[in-house]
Image (cartoon, rainbow, N blue to C red):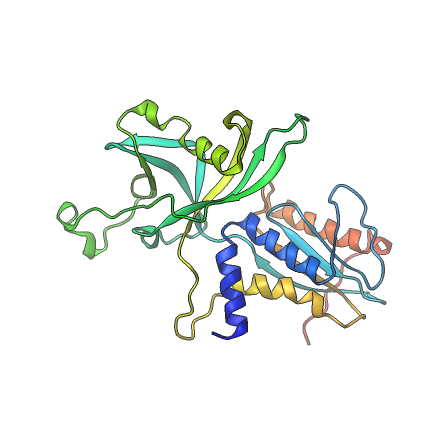
Length: 289
């Protein structure tokens, strides 16, 4: 593989959740000389500066041109179709413990079957300040789950296009559990063990299942969104045109806890604070040359 292809595979292997993807992008931007800004305050930007701001699943990076009068913007998603883990997800059935999940995005259900799956995302952990829990990334580097097909003699029609039902067929198996009480706190216990904290300090989580197989190059195929994410994380650091302000917006869609209109307003607010002298004026975009 070429150096670019190897770098893309490392990006695919590391971006196991939207939170991890944004964290990787932020790290790459910092290496390129970008400064992180806090969401809660003004943006002390200067001409010629490089900055980014993120809130976990969304990231806006920008450079400030010497005489910027417009924005040149590129964007990509940090999310993808997946199985999100519900709160208190453990279910016991047939002597096994399963996790209750919610399909997110346009997932193709049967592609999740018979694969080694793991979990990744973010956890809020109790701190000494009850108003300021700690946000910690978490991911397992080994398979924890699987969604098995049943044997052919239990589903003779499987090769004739049998539909996969999300609320029946997509519950990943995680452990054996003969009794209902044996499932209690399985996931919280796993999180506490992984993060080395007491189970009672786990306040909440946002986790998704991901396929625990390394990225591989097959033929001449393309991986669009994740390729865009990496390109956007690297692009601003190579910008040299001082006539415009370059904006890069890897973002999850929809914005967490926001409607689409509010999400657009948030982006406009971030870019507006990137150009304090232009707040209140309409933003103009420059089409690509």
